[in-house]
Image (cartoon, rainbow, N blue to C red):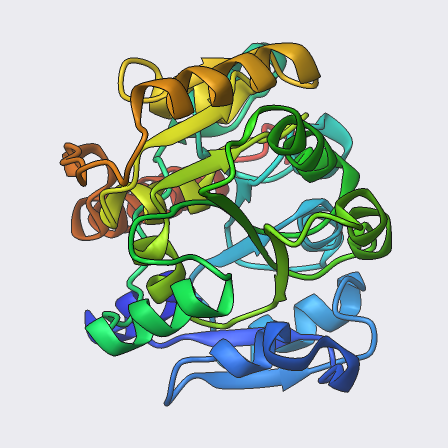
Length: 332
């Protein structure tokens, strides 16, 4: 939704095709992030080709931008549609994105599966999300809610509590390596929550803080951010932690390896012992709270990324207009 908001600020018309609100999702529901002034079409079947066609026709769209595989597949099947692009948030799959005129990769590792893609493609990295700044009070309150005193070292994770995120490895590694003055906070919700609570049982240094729409205070409160993902296509939370100046330990999954190599400690994805050793090394070298770090965020500048997306739209539209204007080659 940040892309939509920035495009609206640049003067473009934005129309969104969404599922109905999901009350059970709480603050994580996508409707909570719709930018003011955007046109919203709601459908119980937003990934149906006819619904995509209706929404595009109603909006008089010049281009469709699909996100995630089902949306890309439905868009490709929509009749008489305008040119369309998709952003790869995971792997490239030809059956989902191969029939679209443009594909935007979020990282270069995604190129490997695209050798047979016939449309246009470009790598445009995700950008640092625009989180509301945290006040000193909210930072202190976050540390206190995790049981971290002024001199305690607060280790943290932010994200979805799913097996792929590797948070279970973090809990085990922390319990095996952390000194008494260390604390661990896990910020997020998901299907792994009960399992994580069981893994953390009996260790009052570990806090499951639940979901928050704006984790800015948590990032500022953390003395170490850990991203232990088994699979991670990019790693937006790492950018948020970098913006807050937190030291980082991350797995070498595809996304983190590409964006964090040279600025964070990387450990083999899915392996407990190397993560435990990395935490041990951090605690040995930081008996008290470490200083904040400064990262080069230039590669993740939002204005540059949004401008490049607009340029790519124009390239795709121009190429498709040229293709459609060509004679079919039939004999009269």
